[in-house]
Length: 259
Image 1: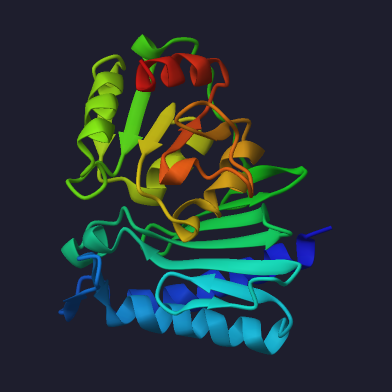
Image 2: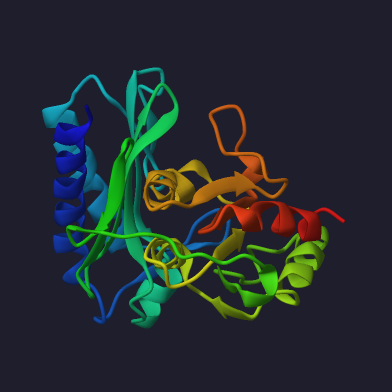
């Protein structure tokens, strides 16, 4: 049902990659936005390229973008764009960033792309279809308990600036087998590919997570808020997001995060 638009989402990611790779590991001017997060010309130009394509091909669709805001949000179909998720990694030359492209239908993510243009890895998730990594189906792995789980998180001082969030995240970190940081969207791709088990993050916006939902769910995982409730148009967890590869981890993780 969404195949044409899923293919178009990949074309959007290709267009963004062309812009991004011309700037990666080269001198780049960095400015701070009003929320103190960094932005580069590559972020802005990549989003502009994607928006122009959408406006040509699907002029009635809405757009939500990190850099240029919202248009036609009431449309049946809305594209959600994060041109460089992980700008700090991009600036530092670390290939843990990615372009996120999501398609919402009536507020529900029905297709999502995570594209890492340097390593040339692309996850594609579409409702009703198994997630693929570079065209091959991927599956989350089994993990029955927290003490066997690998945890990913961006986990910088801004993500857990709220002291209560930090305390609850630290409690989860202390229960898992190991934790890896600064993964941004890449960590969700690794969970979908069966290389990790949990992503726990806070202060996320729609453009940070919308593309991840079809990818994780299509690989057999689940995305919820910190209480374990599935994400939906009515519930975004206040930006407190969990992704798990094995549904048995949902209740265990939520119990630790909500003592």
